[in-house]
Length: 198
Image 1 (tube, helix red, strand yellow):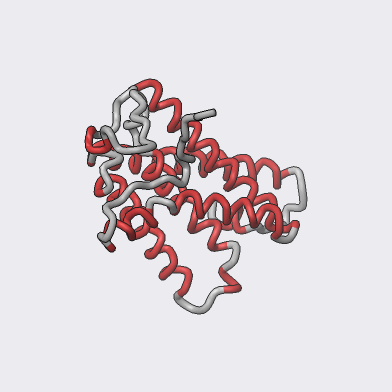
Image 2 (tube, helix red, strand yellow):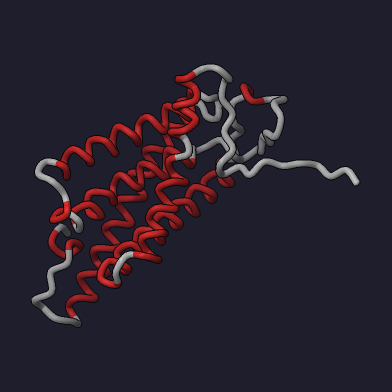
């Protein structure tokens, strides 16, 4: 019985064989998957003190992805025609705008300083700022990778980045307000990283 094969789109990336730079771009485009698995792993395995912040970040990432899916259905722009006819590539009419990868990374870059601040005591001096710079550069490179590999246009990738920043700021504002109200009913001496940096 012949059945049609399909690729798992979350981890399926096409690049030019033998092109090392294209291979690096393909690897970078998988960063959102690696990040979410890492954060979810922390929810499961890290101590109870950090479980709530990690869970809040996971919920935020899922919320951001949901916003992206809604925007894609609303605008309904196609991907660039560069992938037309390639194996295992389905060009949905509504998968182009905005870029989910760019939006995910921009959203993560907004929350990352607060996530990192909670672990500042575990870091070496200057590591906190160094990692922030690395993440910001990585976010931009992920957006570049989506354009370079032909999955999105510059407008689609840059718009996704802007939407991710906006969504991240809105979610962070809502999260800080929730934490502030939650703590007002608890111990007033309690000082989480969330409360210290709201």
